[in-house]
Amino acid sequence: MIKNIGLVAHDSRKKELIDWVKFNAGSLQKCNLFATGTTGRLAEAALKDVLGNEAPSVTCLLSGPLGGDAEISAMIAEKKIDMLVFFCDNLIMQGHQNDVLGLVRLASLYNIPFATNRSTADFIISSPLYKSEEYERMIPSCIDTYKNRKL
Image (tube, rainbow, N blue to C red; front, side):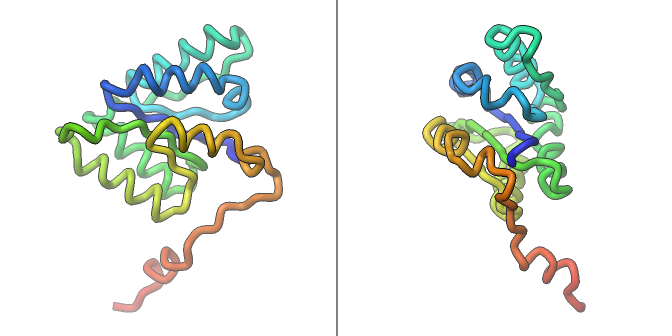
């Protein structure tokens, strides 16, 4: 069951992510939400608008350019994030592009459901596996192989 969700959005895509959060507030209600700076504050306000006192709190990390993307990356590597919704602006180069690339790389490496657009986020959150108690994410064997390599 997906319990810990990371939320990230570049400035030009924040409204789109917040609309998605509002639309899926019921499915997010019992999750632990972690988000970069402004995205987190906006998401928490949106959830309160929809769910009132039943809204989950959102743990706000640093703004992406100030280290928030790196914080979420570390949480993925520590297996503290089960799903990532990252609406990124692919039309401009970000000042913290290396952190963005690292976040994308770790989401893929650690095999977490990872949405970069609304359609993919909708498919993930509406999947029966989203709420499944039986489904367990498999960590690729290459991670242990790399950790235990002999130099």
